Image (cartoon, rainbow, N blue to C red; front, side):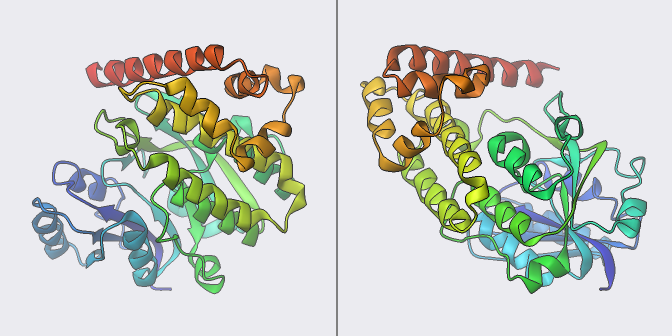
Amino acid sequence: MDKLLSVIIPAYNCESTIKQAIMSTGVYQSDNVEVIVVNNGSTDNTKLIVKEEALNNKNIIYRESKKGVSNARNKGIETAKGEWISFLDADDCFINYKDNKIHETLLKSKYDLLIYNYLVGQSKIDLYSMIKEVEHSKIIMKMLENPTKFLTVWGKFYRTSMIKENNIRFNKLLRYSEDSEFLIRYLLASGQIEFNESYIYKYNLSENSTVRSYNPQLVAEYEKAIKQIKIDLENYPTYKYSLSVFILMQINLIMVHNIFISNGTNRIGKLKSICKKNYVRDALNSIGLRDAKNIRLLPLLLCKYHMYIFASLIYKIRIFYNEKSIKNDKNK
């Protein structure tokens, strides 16, 4: 490998943030980092900005792909010459990159996956403190049961050889949860996982995020991802319960980011309809009153016992606090 680290940035209409993202990677401070920016159909000045940066630094590499974040990330993987790969979204950034001595950690690490803490807006997400297990299977269970915190592709460092030797790529047919599906397959192929207590990534909240806007195709797209992840895990009975929790967490996302933000009527009817689908009903049958202490499962437990009105109230409250969090972060 020519470099220690390849940072892959999918770029789509990100002229206002792409330069900050590139600069946050440490590419201007270390010759051991390469940044691969993959433009996937931008119609603004993204291409010009990245090409100008590439002229100033030979370790900034410009590539193009077909539309879609999976196509962009796969192009980045094909291009990568680093021993490690990390993914960075164009509107996010690495933080305290040099202070956290990432290079020293990567040089010494014997692990297949390094996972760091991160920020969502101004809120700290402390994954390091959440993981007490050292057994590989138990870590995967914890990650499956907490997908919104753990199953993001960013904030992590992957061995390039592990990705390429196992032919792990992003599924181009998926529009949602494609990063979770990629990471699950990587987890199944990997050996030991290391968690680091440093905060190295900032996920910037946006009111314009695609998952915060009503999309009539979102339910079908999430279902497509769920079915693929079920196939990925079908030979691993150890993760049966954790997979059920993962599926129910996806249903939460569908409700909060789709059904209950729409202006349409019969939202409770749509909730009932989704809960009657076979894959959701099977997942609901895996949980019971013992899971009531898990606040995230509470609306699904209410659905299991046909208390849909109370479940809908919880979803509406969650949407209210999500919107409030975005506005508060924007005003800071």
